[in-house]
Amino acid sequence: MDRSQKETLVTSLQQALSETACVVITHQTGMTVEEVTELRRQMRAAGASFKVTKNRLARRALAGTKFEQLSPMFTGPTAIAFSRDPVAAAKVAVEFANKNDKLRIVGGGLNDQQLDAAGIKSLATLPSLDQLRAKLLGMLQTPATRIASVLQAPGGQIARVLSAHAKKGEAA
Image 1 (cartoon, rainbow, N blue to C red):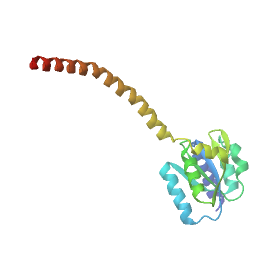
Image 2 (image 1 turned 180 degrees about the vertical axis):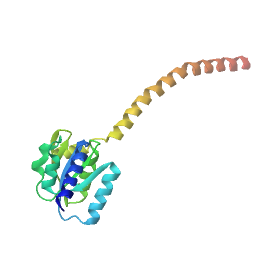
Image 3 (image 1 turned 60 degrees about the horizontal axis):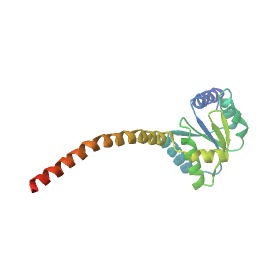
Image 4 (image 1 turned 180 degrees about the horizontal axis):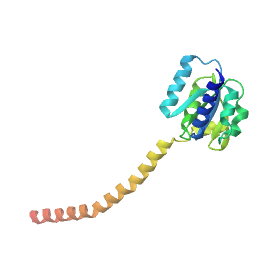
């Protein structure tokens, strides 16, 4: 890799990190190409990215971003997962690490907060942004449905009372 390729890589990584809400730093030792490909596929499906990085280039890319304090975590065979959704990258990385011993969570960051491995694992237990939106929408729709049923109930009750009186009148 020549100097211009390295500069391009650092610039593209720096741009991706500036648009990111969550970064997960992992150590991956002995993972096969198939395993890394499967992890990348799962990350893409969740709206996240996974990139094997050179530590020196990753530290340069972190400079000037909100994740600059994560630089000391880049030692050994590192790879990063990142996403705009605050929990997507963490969910996929933790789920994959639980199934595969070759991937280990080192730490990461959420916006400008540094997280250790336990912090990333607890972040992964939170619902995703889409799940939260769905819950909120469900909560907003529920009162409207209840109001509509309450408003319809008096009319239905009057109709039933009138029907009962009419049936009494016919029987007499």
